[in-house]
Length: 161
Image (tube, rainbow, N blue to C red; front, side, top):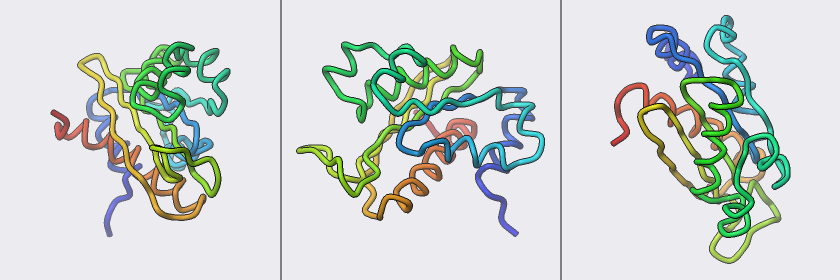
């Protein structure tokens, strides 16, 4: 039987004695939900925040208004600031963030429905990834939660340059 990403994540975080915090927008807490579906996750997951609006991103995660106004909520710049904000808010070793356009509305020129950005911040560096999903709203949220967990696992397995 194959392990789910959240179980692989648990094993990596426990062995390394690392903590993880999440900052979510378009997933509405789905990443945190999946992490906390694993028994014992309180050992390595102090918390997550759903910051859906610009105001929440700025007030809860210290995302700069300049960044939001210049790049929008769905951007590499914003998700990196969200990931750093989550680390700081929860005093965690790793911060993961996600912001995207789940659909079916909300697409913009250059940012179609399905555009999703992910940020990862640690004490050794920061990384951003982006995808464009082609599912409906629920499928896009699921794809995003999967990609966020995979991003963390890739980091923990040394697969990020």
